[in-house]
Image 1 (cartoon, rainbow, N blue to C red):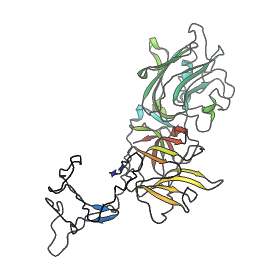
Image 2 (spheres, rainbow, N blue to C red):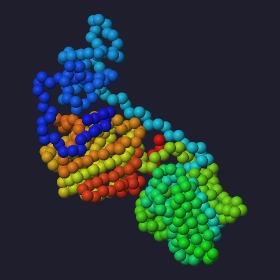
Image 3 (cartoon, one colour):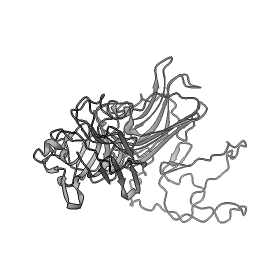
Length: 476
């Protein structure tokens, strides 16, 4: 059964007996039954429905409620249809083949005031030192200090802050970075020991958090108090240490800037292309070397180039935005092996009526693919001629009116069991048009798959390959 595009399916085994065989004299009643009808006591509800009906169809044959074939009517009227001139027949009611209205335009993004923060898109890095040449922030971190950063992360990996005493061979450094959604602080001081303090929770919701880092010599404490998340370096705060870094060195926000990535102290995972830089919002940064005396400096947001560090959107979902339209935008999630059983689940929003949703594809040793697209609001599954039981490429309609182009979150699940496909939608008698290869204008929030006994949840920001027209975070 399908209600408003939502399918309800019995999960038990297919019935063996032919329950759906009725004699030619069987009568279909709508809305109620005649009073004289005899039903056993266990029969379902028999009260009359109060409401209206526009279209009735049996096995694809539709009746526009002309009542020509009706055998019994009681308490029924053509409510809602204006009276027609005596010489003109009543206008027919629309059937389900009526084209859908165009998808609504995606809402405009509202942003905070420029003074309330800025966004880094994963490609820009800013130097606090260059923005404040007369009051170097480096002078505040060579000794003990307190650092406070209000942020929202749109990406699972990336460097939020970095400073080192050398571009290529750093011996003294301090950095704050995200790795798989967790926050880490790494430092090496004059005591020459590499120290790391890592929080335990993941901060990949695109929500605002307040990070506080306290350094007292080689003792480092990291916390997000609202989440009761805390970690420290377990070092003696009484043993003196310094960061031997020249005050003219750049303290970078969002990445490593001019520093050499391969020789940096970052984890190997962050040295991969596309993973080094932070993507998200920075609302404020404060540095203090004497908190008890209220001696602090703040990051100079007013001096930023706002063409590369725009204002923060008021509403953001975690995920990856695809520009779509005329831009070929895509995410590649890496190589996979597929047995007979396949299940793919995607959480997404889109404003496109047509476009490719996902494609599982190989060219050797034989051409093989499983693809799902949407075409004029119709959700479709495409299979190759090499698929079990097929002799030519085929398309199966999954949902005639998917209604997913409303820029609201939707979950799409496709399951293929034992190398066969079961759908509740109609199956075309002839081959359909080619797969929609155009890109969706969309936001991908999460992807998961189960192939046989192997399951995997993907963070869409940790893609294996990508294209133009991609952005971290989904403003709405």
